[in-house]
Length: 462
Image 1 (cartoon, helix red, strand yellow):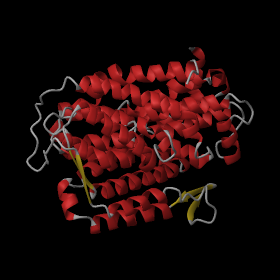
Image 2 (cartoon, helix red, strand yellow; image 1 turned 30 degrees about the vertical axis):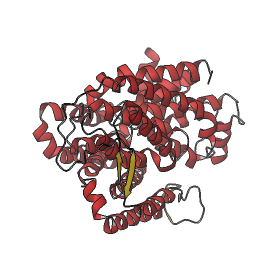
Image 3 (cartoon, one colour; image 1 turned 45 degrees about the horizontal axis):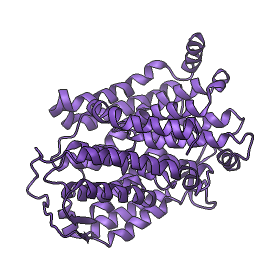
């Protein structure tokens, strides 16, 4: 215990502890605002989130004189916001309608398709393409738990197989983890967690006979005995492919790409320009029928953009403090697969899983005097061909935890809040921040995460 206080004191020299207060305040308001002061929160969340983010940013720039962390955070946030916005706009112009009986089996099949699709278009892309058809399919029996399990399966766990699937894995790919590493080492855990979550959902959904949900008049509520699929706005698939393909235009991977150089780092802007251009073309030339069918508007994405601006900048001190404590020599003995799974997972649920993955990858590599800014050493770490074959297991634990625990709260992964906002815009009363955790994450998701840990990380049976 004394050592922990010493480490904490050492970390404070770089970042004062009180700087985590804005982050805690923002998370508290996200959790309590819609419940206790809903009208005020709805009209002022943008101002509050931006103000708190700018407050921390100003302290870094003018009090600490630290430009490195804010610049990195700005470019990470810009890439995050532009990618999500581009995917949201392109998917909003693709109208998918499923005429079928909304049985538990049909719902499981749709989410299983989403889990596969997430590995090709990302959890964000799959979520945006399928959440509206999922709501329309279940319009006469829709319940909040169905949206929550959609978040569990499609918006998070589904994207475990490729670097395209989830932001943490893509960060690993950019740093040097081989593209097919996830498919090779995480396929069986992916199968296991998808089956577990789908089974839990199936047995809960079987009890859903009636609904208290009153659909809005514009929501299509058509189910037929014959199962049919209808897609409008197929032209947006072309722009969607451009947006996803542009993800690979990273100057740290491909030499010669235009970039912004700062402090030895290469920050992309060509990728973001292409994505914004494709998004504009999507919206400009989208099928009006598809946009109307999806009741497309910008409110859900604006909510994500503004709230995550505050989250990205207010969580800078929390990330630095946790990294400073964990990376000390005294902490090296604790760097085990079990520790990394639970530590990465715990922070991924509340601090966004992408930067958490990067921090714990750096921490695990530091134990072996390896650096994550070396593509060669990251590849050796991932394949177990470097200092110790055991590094492979460490990366498996980090990767599993970052992706799976991203579903634990609304802010663990970018698509979560967006799916929530789309559901609420359709008239579905979603659980509050804490209700989501208490009613769904702890009783349903946590046992699945524990089982994955026990079989895959602890016993290494899968």
